Image (spheres, rainbow, N blue to C red):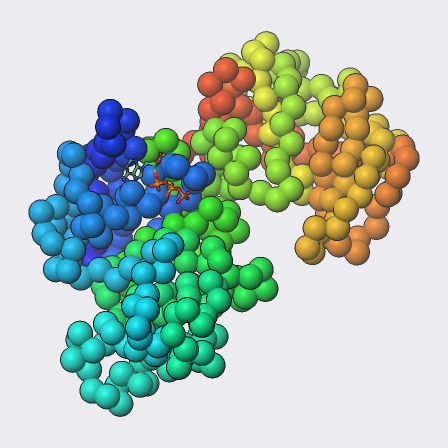
Length: 372
Ligand SMILES: Nc1ncnc2c1ncn2[C@@H]1O[C@H](COP(=O)(O)OP(=O)(O)OP(=O)(O)O)[C@@H](O)[C@H]1O
């Protein structure tokens, strides 16, 4: 059982707390993604777990044992960090083999182990190259292969696909979860790419300014973001955000968009009369007939393809911009007047002042992303 527990970790540089009383539990065999903007403290957190730096306060418990004071080499951790840290005088094969040699595996076992992981990461053709003859993407995958080769119980991966080109990254996003699951390791995986976070994480911890803002499964984070910032970080195209003041009549809470009533069936009455921000995911908005009930008139300004989607920029009568996305190839107007239908049941409301999402009875979650 290799669980990982971080208890009330604080790390300061000068007087600035780059990690601020941070507590985190990672289950045995779980892949936890640390996701957040540059400077959030993700790398510092990994370095603390690895034992390269020490916390100013707090405890690091690995497999039930307090490791806070234990040297890096005795923590049973494999790492692939951003700066590669490959041995320059060794070729890729020997670099990847180094943890297997430290484990005293047989020569045949080492060859088999290296070749297997190299093939998976598509670097089997450059195993005889030294680091200086590898591209940045190949160096990064060599470092990742080395971290995986030793099958450590805990793996720390700091943005391992950052330098990998888009096509390979897409493939790796599909391959890596299977590979990590097969290894059975407890993994902490840092990325700034929300799609990678959603594809790889059993859970995602969203970090900013040295704190965890929300932790939950990818679905939790997407469907019940804790605040506006998190809602904005997950989703492409970005969520639509419109300032509104909810009202109420006999049939319930609603908002008006271009004087058209959009019911918000799951919202509490406490929002009525309060300035809020309505969050509409672009994929929850659809084109409809102008004469349909609840149709909102818009003007189609522009249309762009985005991977497997078509994204349309719309303007409401009041000049508010709305993005609509639909599967590529499905029909829809590409210019001129049109009408949309908005699904109020799928909308979010955020407090205008604090940015916090206003909880609905059906989606109330606690800090761990579990139903409260
Ligand atoms: N050795 C250090 N001395 C002083 N400040 C540091 C040191 N290491 C990190 N920091 C600061 O700690 C904060 C968090 O840095 P960290 O590298 O963990 O961010 P990150 O979330 O990993 O960002 P990125 O995604 O860009 O790597 C930053 O403000 C950084 O400047």
